[in-house]
Image 1 (spheres, one colour):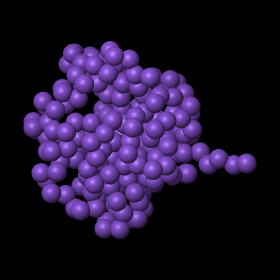
Image 2 (cartoon, helix red, strand yellow; image 1 turned 90 degrees about the vertical axis):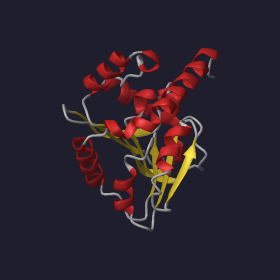
Image 3 (cartoon, helix red, strand yellow; image 1 turned 90 degrees about the horizontal axis):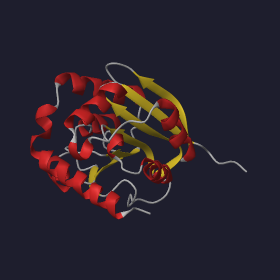
Length: 211
């Protein structure tokens, strides 16, 4: 159960991203977009997939996801920041995109709904990472995938958040062993964990339950 202090921190974090929303896209470089495009291509997403973009923000990933699934799939762009979603909606994306304002620990989707859940530049900001992973696992279909990605290494991401300070100063990526433990506790199996200077990528698959 969330404590008063954790709830207060979540509100402060939400307000922080609301304030940054209008200028967020100015920080996105061509190199960042190229890296994200390559990651999406490597996932080989099926054209009929249901994709959950968690921490979608201003919709940086949406053009790549729309291209990957065409007009037959569905994309749910989820973020807890109303202002981030406002910026994304203003871009008038393809109508296959639905926008959802929600916390990652209470995703308003049914069980076994999405083929893929992707968290780009979002996972460190989940205050309860264990609860978040379990909720994500709930909405992913059996054998569906979770992707956690960044366009920099773990060390660079953590150093950035610590240098920014304030409400995001403790928003850190766990080390490999701890992250693997959290993912496995959620009922997912890690199939890829790469920490490179130019990107960070984790792929996990929902384990099929057998009798």
